[in-house]
Image (tube, rainbow, N blue to C red; front, side, top):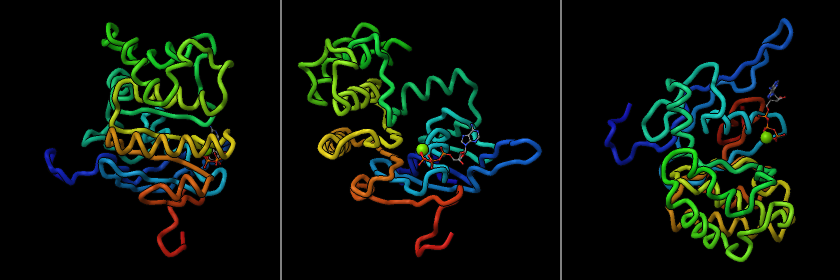
Length: 235
Ligand SMILES: Nc1ncnc2c1ncn2[C@@H]1O[C@H](COP(=O)(O)OP(=O)(O)OP(=O)(O)O)[C@@H](O)[C@H]1O
Ligand SMILES: [Mg+2]
């Protein structure tokens, strides 16, 4: 185990993660012993066939789901030992999540969607100003009063990315962020991620079927049946 102030300590560490689910009188093994280390500022892509466990693993890393066994350390803290309140705080402050289907709140404007995470805990006073800055960063200052159904898919995903960044998390977890987008909008989102990584030193973990997304990552891990395929191709 590394010391708490070790500068080379991974920002995200998954240790022997298993996720099982009872199914009738059987147990299905969704993740089977996943270990992964991601350094601060690194971008890692998870690829693999549908059903191989990518979303499940991302959900566990983001603290949205619990593993059946194993540990997730974020910035040196074991989140699998946290109570729900502590975990909710960590999710809000340290991890931004971006989904394939954007998951914006349809009744709120772009600006209100981006400001929302800032209302969950303190920082209310500056929420609107911060949301404006983030919309500018994703190139949508002129759309701040639009609701999600008045925005294109690519614009909605840019709002969702701005929302994910609202509390200035060091880690962004993205599940098929370009999965619902045409190739032009996908390229814009990928350029945006590159820019954000460069400007904000984000750590990024992204699940994707899209080879163009994987090509931008520092490392690619392939999942098959809940396990990483070892470098060289065998499971
Ligand atoms: N709540 C659940 N109940 C039963 N099975 C589940 C549940 N959630 C996930 N699974 C199963 O876990 C496996 C992994 O699912 P997961 O969504 O993580 O795959 P994925 O790699 O993200 O696939 P895709 O590329 O289609 O998004 C699948 O076989 C799925 O059917
Ligand atoms: Mg998935």
